[in-house]
Every structure is written in C-alpha cells, then in structure tokens.
Image (cartoon, rainbow, N blue to C red):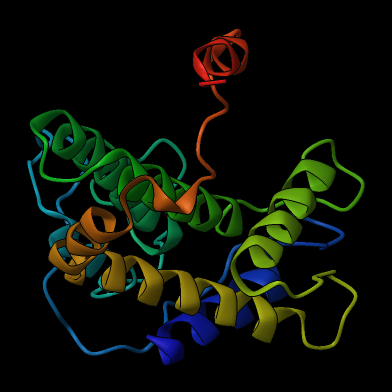
Amino acid sequence: MKRTLLVLFVLLFGFALRGEECTAPAAAPDVAPAAVPAETGEAAAVKDGNALLNALLTLFDNLVPEKKGAPGEEKVTKGGLALVDERLSQLARDATSSLEAGTVDKIFYYRYKRMLSIYKMVITPVVKNELLENPFMKAFEDFVWSVTYERWAWGDKDAIAKMAAAMEEEFVQMKIYLDTKQKREELKQKIGKRILPPPPPPPGSKKKAEEKKPE
C-alpha cells in the first residue's frame, strides 16, 4: 500500500501539479499484476466494503503507457492515467450501488467517495495559476488535516510523504471500521445515553414537586 501511494504521488505531483504546462507521465508504475477493477461500461456492481477497498489497491495494476495514434486514427484502448480515471468512475458507481443495496453504510460510503475524489484530483493535470489550482490545493490541505492533523502545503519538502501517509491512514481506518462493526455495536449498547448529560426536567416540574412536598 505505501509503495503504491508513494509511486503514485512522486509521479503525479511531479508531472501534473504545479507544472508550467500540462504534462502526463510517460510510463506507468512498475507493479505486480493483480485483479483489476471493472472497466467503464460495465454495470455497477454490488460489493461489500472490503471489496471496494481492495479495488483501490489495484487502480494502478496492469497499466500500459498511453499510445499516441496517427492523426485521424481511432483509439481502440486506453492506457496510463486515462485507464485509472475510468476505473475510478466505475468504483464510484459501484460504491453508490453498494450503498443502495445496504452492503455499506453512509459513513463508509462518503469516506470512500472522498478517497476517490482525492485520487481523481491527483491524476488531473493542473497548470499553475489555473482556476482549478486553489480548489485542488484546498481539498488536499483539508484531507490531510482531517486524517492526520498535519499541515499540508505544496511547497513543503515533505508534502508528498504527508499526502501518502494521510491516504494510507485513511485506508487503514476504513478497513478497521469494517472489521470492528460487531464490536462497535456492542459498545454503543453499553454506552447508550450515558455519553450525554441527562435532559433537563420539563417546565413546571420543579414547582409541582414543591407543591407536593409534605409540610
């Protein structure tokens, strides 16, 4: 997981963000083949949370460099980051289908969609001073802070490491969230309403109690 994220951010931040021109990486990360998420065009699949998380680990598997065709030549297959983009879109549809089917809850769903959004922004080239630059950077700052409480800025020398650590931490927390469902339900039963202070007495109850007090 950590190796995949570091390769991702070194390549994509180095080539795509803060560039004077939009430039796409020429080659894909060198990773071992594994199961590949469903391609765009397939119907949304109902998956459980673990299957959705595992699909994130295969986003960059079996990629091939984007091949430029001759002028007027129809492109048959996509490679590189274009294929990753299609996989992200498919996973977004799968997540929505899983929420509707009840195999994941809203908490997991929205955290998962946020992860997909971060991946989407990372693979989207942004020219310096372009309109998208500030919203992208703000989203990255908010994500890192909400997960690891680290201040993130592109100019920092450890920006890539901080982002990779935040994504890894969020992945782990989401996995733990799934694996501890039964334990969490048990704790909720024990805690009950004790976590909140008792509600105030209804208006007039104190006066009535005093009236009933014996002489």
